[in-house]
Length: 156
Image 1 (tube, rainbow, N blue to C red):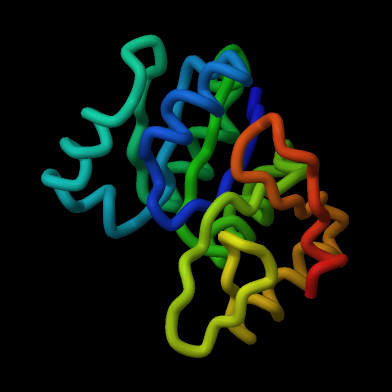
Image 2: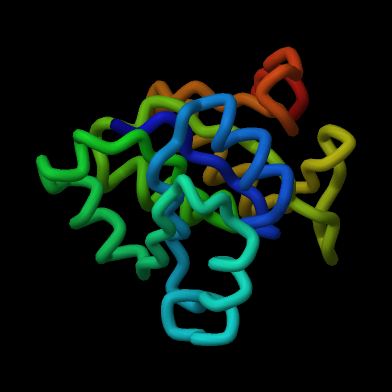
């Protein structure tokens, strides 16, 4: 069962590994990212940042969609991490079980504007966010599980 799809450009780090995994009872932490899936060094460093109680899967986007749609994955409590808005949309399009997207951290970069203290989006991101909203996805911002949800649509 997918417990959370989170956009966080840092992917696996302490806040995710300790706070979110513990709060949601996660037993499978999945990184869905084409670049990381091909980089042994990044895979190694992400493996060091996770709790021992959670299995870590690092898959490219297509394999992540396939695995999440496999009935065998339904027995796990899964936290999915992507590093950009577009990847969250691709997963939501490919996996019907995804109904909500957590915006956790997207650092500022060229052409991006802050919509909250930790979320900076570009015009391209904005277009994808509108597509996700039209699809009926809940789009919420929370850094940690105890934060009050802020709806992305109210901030853009």
